[in-house]
Amino acid sequence: MPSDSAVKSYNETLCDVQSIFLHYCKLGTVIFAGDFNAQLDTDTRLPPNQKSKLLSAFIKHNGPSPLHEIFDSNAFSYVTARSRIDHVFIERSLSHIFTKYCVADPEDIVTSDHLPIAFEMNLRGERHNIAPKSGHIKNINRSKSTYFHLSQYQAVIESMTTKMFTTHSLENLTPDMINSAIRNILREAEKQLPQAKFNVSAKPYWCTDLKNAHAQARHFRSIWLQQGRPRGGQHQSYLSYKSAKRLFQRLQRQCIQKYENSVFDQLNRAADTDYRLFWKLL
Image 1 (cartoon, rainbow, N blue to C red):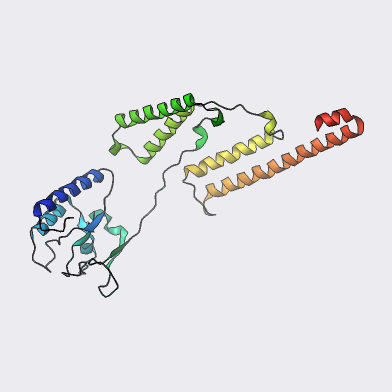
Image 2: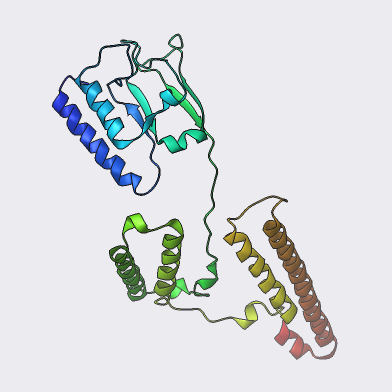
């Protein structure tokens, strides 16, 4: 906030802060702090001036509460005048998540005229569902994507993104809605890219049992992703995913070993009976 004595400039800046505050209040809970260069009218260290009256009226009109009043702190933050012109404002409904509020000791080594303000919050994390990747097109051959494919891919993304923000207001979009919309946009855009064909000879050891184990591992992985990728032995989705993954990897090693042994046996038999077949197989 302006530090000079121009009340008009201070009021204009305060109006800008109010516009920002009201905008983000629509999206969620707002906490704002900083050097406001004015004390509140409840502070009796210094006689109130015009800027103090403007700041106090702003707080009363918009509803946030000074954090130092919630903790009943009388510490000053501005060393020169021994006053409190640095503030932390929160919504009263958030007071239960704040566990500590303190201002640095004036005797500490501080190069600024303003003492640091520290506070602690006890926040509870909330995970949003993470969509699995199974909805995306498989086997995209990006190496064969031409400029035409990429331009079509970009055009679809721009078109659907513009449509999403013109149809829905940004304030009404939740994280899950945005996540779902992005997934649909990518799925439609990837249809513009060339797809690679499945190479049968790339994994000749593949069999039905291995396919089923792979599908089961992907299934448990999708459940783990939907629950926010938790880690630790206390999470059943994590344990099930890791167990299915180990089962698949163990079965894959067995199938690879079995296939290699069959190839070596075939080479040994051909070397003893038909050297032309041997060199053909080799």
